[in-house]
Image (tube, protein in one colour):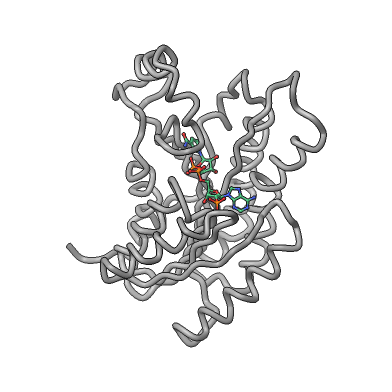
Length: 255
Ligand SMILES: NC(=O)c1ccc[n+]([C@@H]2O[C@H](COP(=O)([O-])OP(=O)(O)OC[C@H]3O[C@@H](n4cnc5c(N)ncnc54)[C@H](OP(=O)(O)O)[C@@H]3O)[C@@H](O)[C@H]2O)c1
């Protein structure tokens, strides 16, 4: 099979676990040199890099706590240094804003502090990561934001998370217009329920699992590779005419 991203560079935030790790591995398997970020999971990030290298790909990991606004410029100066060392330039072809925190918070138990932290990682960081990426992003490049089905159909139990993801959907459209003249596409992938650490507690509840599966046309939780496949399409030349879209990848949840 020909690789879709040979010679390209990619940055995937939150690549140490879950969906982000699968995206990093998939983009690397398509030939991209991948920078992946992590916050607390140094071991997970090292494992992801090792798995990519073992499969013949190229990757490196950078630490960044995206709840801290100051982390973004620092992340990009380290990214620049690593990219120059590996590729001779700071040019970035694909940016995937994936990192996300849980501790989702309901209406009654949210605090201004928990609200701010959720928004910092889920909404503020993607905005400023794109802002920092602007001068590095190659013409014809790609931005993919990992949103959620909850961005369009809010979940009653997690209003703060749902609000943040609605913001990402909106930002996706605004950025598509902003970056279109440079041939950069900007899209969001909105997963439904995917088996990751983010919903371990949900998956321990057999009744809840049965009800989610019954409400999903394809009858199961998503696998991280299901989401990575959509991101890889959007990141590739095959996705060149798709921009400003929120593509739900949920196996048909709540149709
Ligand atoms: N799983 C689902 O069902 C689902 C559904 C819809 C949307 N999503 C979205 O998909 C994305 C990935 O979620 P996931 O399920 O793969 O989650 P996950 O397995 O919990 O992984 C979360 C990733 O985000 C990183 N992260 C968390 N807090 C961070 C912070 N403060 N600064 C920087 N990075 C941070 C983590 O890094 P460390 O491990 O280093 O802390 C990890 O790499 C998120 O945006 C999430 O909202 C997930």
